[in-house]
Image 1: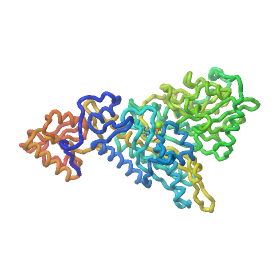
Image 2: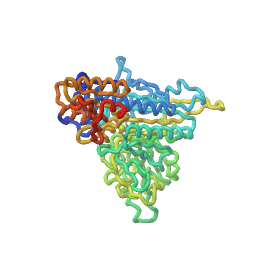
Image 3: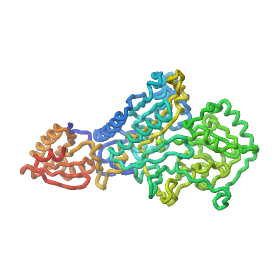
Image 4: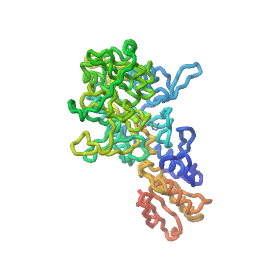
Length: 579
Ligand code: ATP
Ligand code: MG
Ligand code: MG
Ligand code: MG
């Protein structure tokens, strides 16, 4: 297939650990010459890194194509307009890179492309016969992450596979979701990743499903719980706990009620809501994500609203209609929070926000003490979507903000206990609903001649992040240990000496390449055999073939990187062994 020569390739291994690399994948990918840091959160892919990235990309592409997804490629540099229409221009806030062109027109570097996918379908598709369809792309994404870290794991520029499905109805969406879920399992299996599919939202609150694929590693930023006895696994942000039993004072946490000095607020909020995008709509779908809205809840007869339910940046969604029904007979007002009250979503909710709004509020102490409104994640400062529920308004089983401890009983089975684990989000699938098709009024003509609004799913894989996740799971004290499916080469040929051994290594390399293998030959003459062996272990190609002293007898040594096993075998047998 191909033969790379170490003597002429851009492969430079480092003797020392780079000072700024905190996690194994970052350290090893830098040391072994796969990537170089070029900018904060931006990395140059060197030839070896490119090869791995390409192999991961090809696996992702093949599985997407196999389920009938069609590949497109959107621009990354986009005008602000569609993102304003969807509300995400402000919703993403500081997380997007924005810029102006020479005429002063605002643009952004796309963090993800739901808007463009919806617009494309709107432009090109007219009939229900055109659906279902799923578009995907593998493209560089840009996000101004608050804390780019750990090399490829959290970049500001990174490669993502993003797919967008369009279906006529919920059943279609569920089928598309299921297809992608299965394809994702095949992909992550092929990539050699040890992963768990976790619920990314509360099933009780949300009308729709969202799951994350978390690759297990201690350096991961996500905490999730798994059950000791059943298959239940959930991001700690999404675990539901049952509401306290009414009438049992032991079970009822003390709920503090805070009165603010004045309550000017709700009237102004209502006025604000009247001309808001979200106000007055009766077709709330699961896609109307909580992250856009504030709900205030007023009990019958109460003068001021007593409860505020707010969406924070996060990926979960809630069926607002269901929520409102669950809270009845209280009156529920719904607001678009983003334009006028960015502090609600940016500043992390705290008593000061409630006070500022003049809303009476309840503190549910079952959430992390001191951060009652923001829990869901156990780490302070982490984004979490959560619903704040006071005791009287808590529909059974929908408190989403409880702190989870290992050891807690499993919500899915009678016997199991939860244990806490850490992982990296390598994929995320989401039944999006009609948020974007409504924002852009995407319609196709239905069978009866009436317009039908398609429902969307979106499905992401962090392709560059997956490279790092694989490295996190496949390394040892001496270096990387790539799974054969993604290794930059199949064979690493080491010419242990100069002269005939070098010639023989190059000759053998050419033959192996002709036979269809990817070959790296260490043909350097200025370094010792010892250095070559150390580098081979650092680089982590599955097989090393040493062309050394025994060449005179027609023998080479085959080393298995993963097991450390070494076998001497005749050159003539090598090909058969490797293919
Ligand atoms: P995270 O929770 O890690 O910030 P996300 O939920 O913001 O990720 P999504 O919007 O779901 O990410 O994007 C789809 C996929 O893109 C993620 O599952 C992840 O694998 C990848 N991804 C997201 N942000 C980054 C990043 N900064 N660097 C590398 N990959 C990323
Ligand atoms: Mg993110
Ligand atoms: Mg996430
Ligand atoms: Mg996600």
